[in-house]
Image 1 (tube, helix red, strand yellow):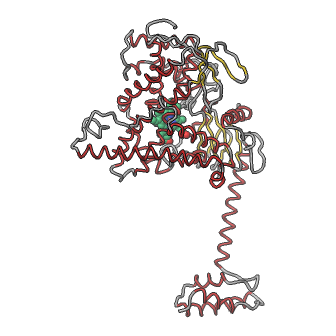
Image 2 (cartoon, rainbow, N blue to C red; image 1 turned 90 degrees about the vertical axis):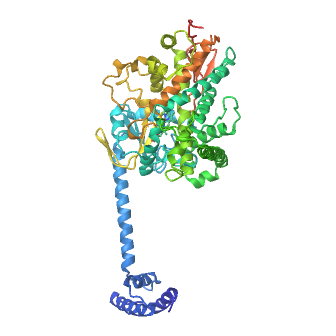
Length: 589
Ligand code: HEM
């Protein structure tokens, strides 16, 4: 039996002479086909045709049905793509927005450090989209629409069709994998279904003790800064939220409030900053370029630290669960979250181990993805929210007085630990938190890749566009919130929220892909820490003269507590009035 290579060799020799006409060529091919079928012992015509099409052309007229089909397919593919791209360009072109340069679009305008990008994007939206509530922009060859009007947010966020996260989230994959925040399609649906029960309100009962312990430590730390020079309150709050989330998510005490040099804590910060840089700088986006950049080595070190710890904790916890089960602890049927049958505080990880059904539903890697996701989503959002709340309470004496009056009415002079019921009774504090999240949403913008065309007003936004929802601007729509720049918790009194568009206030996102922690944990966690801070007052610490400086925009948050007391702008820094935290029973200290 001859080999295929030999057949091709022989055929090419035979076909070497130039053909005078197509008929002659076809006759040769037919003859060759017979011979090849005979020699190879096969008779599939397509194989012969393929051999013939592979032969070196002795004439420019060589004809092959396969080659023709391939060329036709290629032309159709190119034509469809050309049509799609032309349609996209035409439709996007109709939407108002800044003119972009070929290939780079508006990338040069946003080629700034990540703390300034937010300002630039908001600026573009304000300049071009104030009236319509949306405008377009180009990052490289990728089209974006920046949206900040409730009516335009709804068709996207409210639809199950647009749950695909945009390219910006891809840079989180090395750390978070495709956990709940970053996954899409079937995987997301499945995970969301598994994880939703974990956020049952009863889980908060287990967590309340962690909040109390950690806010006590926070108070102790802040005490030391009283009456000293200006200091940035952000690291204190973030360490506290990180400790809370480490313990509630993994059952692990990261102790970052006491150990600022913790490798894990440093890695969380650094990777966040690297990811933001990648999102903004288009040349860092292709993997092969990123791998050559100075960021990459540190990025990999961070991943090693972050995954190393999660893997270690998961393995240890699984082993503990196994041993406790072996030692005869039976599942407590009365408590749907109790897997150990003991009174031990359950971490989110325990619930995942339970849900994993010994690896059949969730593998160890799946568990790690989710634990890492909750570490990331659970600490950054709440710490930003709490810092802004402090700033706003510090700057609004009257609001602060009302918060204190409400707490006084609940605690009636007692310094007993707070309970879930207390938290539910703090209606005005809840309005204050909501209003803080309105002015300074912890997630100031989010993005979706449109899977289908969407109609916004008189415009059709084509599929393939990235919809960037600028929550920060949405929350400042003067048609929804009177005096939108003013901190006014009354905006959230029941009588004032009547008739408000449901998509006009979305700090936790909205629709099927909203925050799974939502009010349940996010708001309560902020509330609990706020109470913790209020206990500074109950311990009679003199915070008189302490003020706050808001120094930045929304992305890189630094809030300084300082002795400066006026309210003016200097060197881009806005000084505000002092933060005063009142005692439980007394007036202002
Ligand atoms: C003030 C506190 C919080 C705020 C403002 C907040 C805000 C948000 C927002 C805006 C999203 C949507 C993100 C996007 O689509 O890109 C989101 C998603 C998410 N959040 Fe939160 N969050 C908070 C607290 C928490 C907490 C405490 C947890 C967990 C312990 C959490 C877990 C998640 C998860 C897992 C997702 C992804 C949900 C999904 O895609 O199905 N969040 N959050």
